[in-house]
Image (cartoon, rainbow over all chains, first blue to last red; front, side):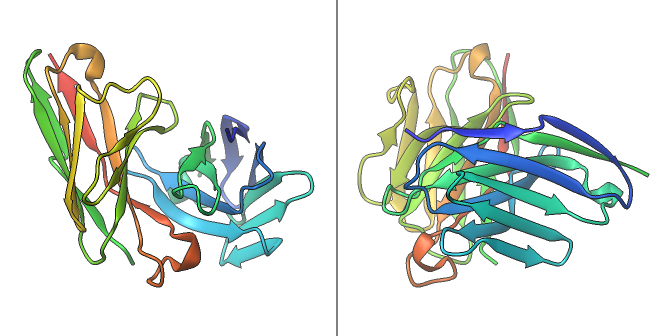
Length: 113
Length: 121
């Protein structure tokens, strides 16, 4: 089955700096890659996703890149703010496989003011 | 956007009792809902896939007789933890998949509920 690795497990940045979180996946059939933000005591919230037919997607301060050949995708947050502090999860899914998501281990992002 | 609710948000129960958690899709229909368990500082672990009108599909290692799942309508799935024990204490999260053709498009994104914190004494 699919295996998703996420790095780093913790990331501390200064407010205003950029943060990058990287994920690799094992199954080349995966074609949907969402990113979730989870605040303490809450459920995950979809912040951005990318499909296999594009290499990059941007939404304001958040961007995701996908390299299908290398089987890795990354989340980029620019101009970080304290409210960006949370745990971020990447995931991968295969179309037609019941849309089951395989999650990475998570990255705890701390943005210091 | 698609909204998923869970009830209750937290519950404390005695060992040996059963607890029911509801998951509702508020503004869309979901043929498939997923149930996850998350231990502190860990990732989400898929427990089962719940399909409306049929039996749930459980992941390996998840006891179907202990975690009863019912998906009676396109907007409601329930998870019942039977004979709960302290080791069942966890954060339970559901998600719902948008039907094809709606906001989710062909890839059917999952939208997550806020989670239910279960503490078994």
